[in-house]
Length: 82
Image (cartoon, rainbow, N blue to C red; front, side, top):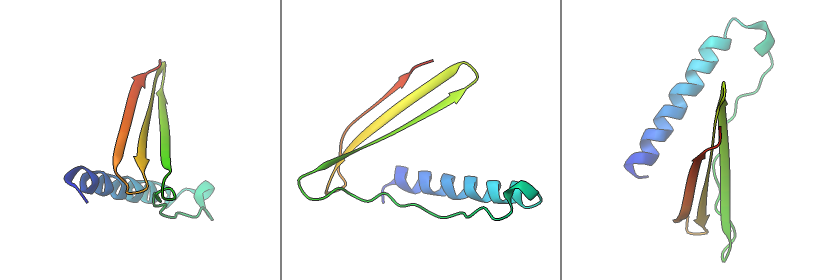
């Protein structure tokens, strides 16, 4: 895993742990299942497009990444939509 991949994985683990600590005393979080989801490559000869977005107040952002079955990055984009 590259430097960026390792950094993002560490960030996600830290975020998940912070969420678990915040929810520890929260009755509304009782019974919530936390599980790790790993990206899986598409079948050979295919590409996979993953998208994401975020909104804060009046700002919105969206992004996408295209990867092949070797997990190689082919294209990506991001845009301020808000």
